[in-house]
Length: 302
Ligand SMILES: Nc1ncnc2c1ncn2[C@@H]1O[C@H](COP(=O)(O)OP(=O)(O)O)[C@@H](O)[C@H]1O
Ligand SMILES: [Mg+2]
Image 1: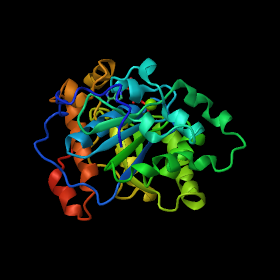
Image 2: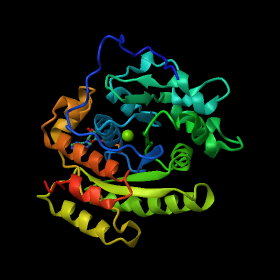
Image 3: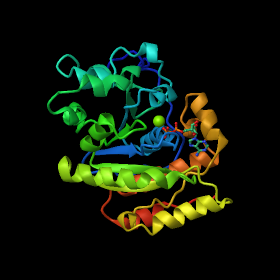
Image 4: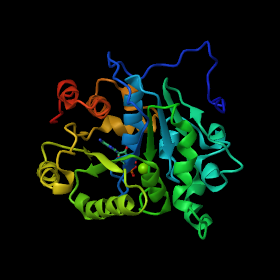
């Protein structure tokens, strides 16, 4: 597949590697397509999508990040200017006969990490699709040609459980739930779990929960500790809470402003350490043996 090369660098210029984990992780046997979900805005989905994508890429995985939010923060957060985007994922979803996935995918500033950019027009997706048969399958079909090209496709989803999120959950084998350590975090979690069940029943019986990650964790606060305790005893989430919690860290917001992954922006800050550990946990799920998971991760307790 040859990519739209607006953002590619001359081949003589070597792209920077993301951080330096000093280790490569085994690749999954087959591509893993993972939605990063929670209909609550501001809970760290996009930040996590960018930094897990960067973390996985630095572990030697071939990664595509798909930006499904009309705010396009995943696209701009990886340094792509929206006015440089000729074809976005919106074009492919709405007019699949006129657009191919190759026209949409761009290289990023990092090795192993590509993006299917979003567009402000994604806010019109639902109305544009009204009455269309098979509208929940658009993304799933669009991603089909990529199964040999990537090890991971991460889907950054919008802050609603509308048609774009349904497309994402339908196209994924796994869902990674982002839960902010915040008093209102539980309000939407039940609804998200119900939606996942409904998608499993009606559209995608193979969908499973990859795990729940706690974001903006602060071990000094009671609410952070309570959230972890509460989710840990939920039967639906048994064994599914990632050991690594993403701690609150101002450098993460600063990296977003600088349009860099935290792993490049400040590789030694707690934010970078947490996203590295979480990426290793996710990669360790590639191997059927849970033993790898135990030996490669070192949970952050903040
Ligand atoms: N661990 C963190 N520490 C500090 N700020 C964070 C952290 N994670 C996310 N943020 C900030 O919180 C805001 C919302 O995050 P974002 O990833 O955009 O959420 P969502 O995609 O769920 O709406 C952003 O300004 C982001 O920089
Ligand atoms: Mg977002």
